[in-house]
Amino acid sequence: PRNAPAEAGRVGGGDEHRRHDDRHGHRQDGDRTRVAQERHATSLSRVRLFLLARHGQSLFNVDGVVNGDPLLDRGLSERGIEEAETLGGQIAHVAIDVLVVSPFPRAVQTANIALGTREIPHVVEPELGDVRIGDLEGRTLADYRESAAHANPTQRFPGGESLHEAALRYAGS
Image (cartoon, rainbow, N blue to C red; front, side):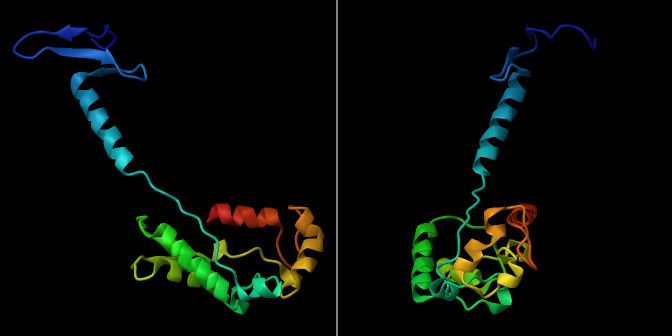
C-alpha cells in the first residue's frame, strides 16, 4: 500500500535487501544508494573551473588614457605582451573548453598569446567590453577618476553608462 511504513528489509529468494538513511537523512535502498554514489562521483568529475583574466597592459594604459571603444583600442604594450606570456605559463596545464573574450583587441591579443598554440574555440562577447565612458573617451585617467560617475556607481558617465549598469551588463552576459 501507498502509505504503509517502509520495510526494514526483506528476505527470500536470494540476497537480503536493506533500506537505510543516507547522509542527508533520505531513505534509500541498497541499489539506489550505489546509483546515487556513482552519480555523485560522476558529478565531481564534471566540476567546471571559471577562469577570469584581465588583459595585459595596453598602450592606452601606458599613456594614461581611458578607452571604452574597442574600435579605438591600440593593443598591448611590450609589458602587456610579457604579462600575457606569464599568464600562458600559469594556465598551461589548465583544461580550457572555450574562451569568451571582449571585442577589445587588447583582450583578444592577451588571450591568443596566453593560449599559444592551443586550439580553443573563441567566443567574442560584446557585452564584456569596458565601461562605456561616453564623452570621456580618449581623456586622461585623471579626468576619469575626477568624474562624478567614478565616485557614484549609479551615476552615468556623460554620454555613457554608469558603473552599476556596466556590472549588470557583465552579469547578464
